[in-house]
Each structure stands twice: as C-alpha cells, then as structure tokens.
Length: 158
Image 1 (tube, rainbow, N blue to C red):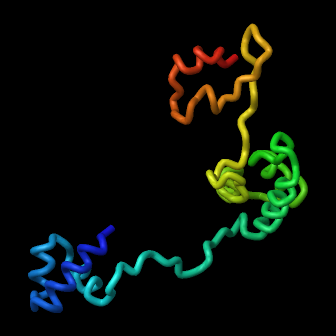
Image 2 (image 1 turned 45 degrees about the horizontal axis):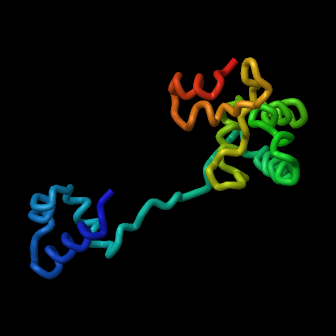
Image 3 (image 1 turned 180 degrees about the vertical axis):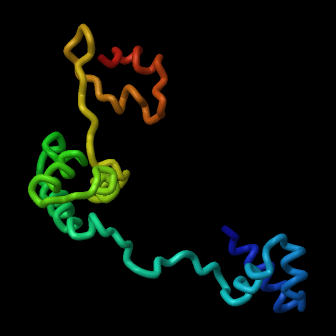
C-alpha cells in the first residue's frame, strides 16, 4: 500500500518537474505501471468489490441466519444460538448441505453488540474446590496458547 505522500511526490515529479515515468519508477522504487496509475488518480483509488460475493451453498440461507440472529438480540446472552446450533438448525430444519465452517464464517461478525465481532460466549466452568465460576475468557486473557500461570492463579481449568 502506497501512501498519499508518495502519490504527491511522484505526481509532482512527473507533472511539475517533468520527470519521465521510467525515471520516476527508478527514483521512487516502484513499477512503471504503478507510476502510470498514480498519475491517473490524484489519491489512491482503494479496492472496490466489483460484484456481490458468490456463495453457492450458503447464499439461499443468509436470510434465515439473519432472522435467527435478529431474534437472538432479544434473548439473554446465555440463551442465544451458537454457531454450531445455527448450523444444526439449518441442516435439520432447512436442508442445508454445506459444511459447518462455511456457515460459521457468515455469523462471525454479524450482530455483535459490542462491535468486537464476538457473538458467542464461552462456557463457564466451576473452579475446583470452590463454587465461584471461572470464565475461560478470563483464564486465557486474550492470548493463545494460554499462559499456564495465569490459568492456575485463577483457580485452574478442570
């Protein structure tokens, strides 16, 4: 990815100072085709998807998934559908023939309340020898593989 400053420097060198495309490519260390593109556009054009993403297996079921996720927004967190449960419902109730990973990619970021992309919560386990719950997100601390010390300081994972 090239910066706007590089665009400006190359455009100034070619348009104002009269530098050739070939010389600009050599001086700035970019391909001649890239220099030509930078001369055509005043700012980087960015990437734009040409058409809608093709999903031959999952396409007909995206409406069903969105409806399930919308219904889940009104339910308590622990009663919401997991990705596996959505897959099972699609397979059993609607005849979905695709695999679990293709369906899971659709609900990975959709409908997350906090904007983090995390839609499903991890199970809560009981600490050994006590009755205080341990959330695995606390034990792992956001890193993988988890630090053994952080797990055992918090009571361990059964």
